Length: 160
Image (cartoon, rainbow, N blue to C red; front, side):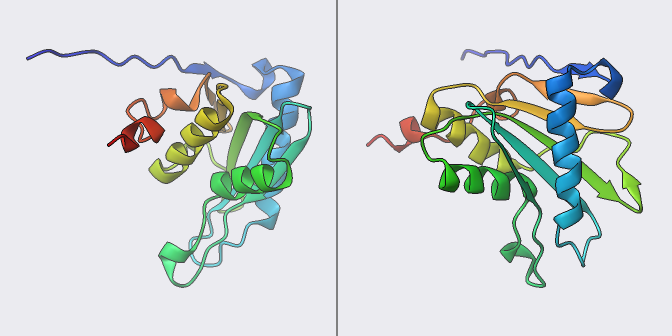
């Protein structure tokens, strides 16, 4: 039997400690929460994807009375970015959540399905995707989506 250790480096900082480019991306994600369709949970999530040419694509969660039919903000954003600009890699994504009249205190972290889609985006473009998770008290940042899902399912899993 053998074993291995998985390590994930997570940067933790405040909004005030962020660079201007990170602040801009977070503010775009916060703005995106306003368009979320969340009549059932009241949990409005926004995401903003930064493309390699500097363009920003926003998206938000879209709920449905048949809960599995809704879609998270991260996937809406990444699918929109890839549909609009299929040859323009996404280099970073920021995520923010608004609930009960204010942004959440702790960072909004992506669900497992969104993490899987993020790793597919990395694989598609063969470039890391920075993930920035906003909370009023602190921000989490990882340099690659694979840091959030290190044993992801990918094209190498489809070998015969």
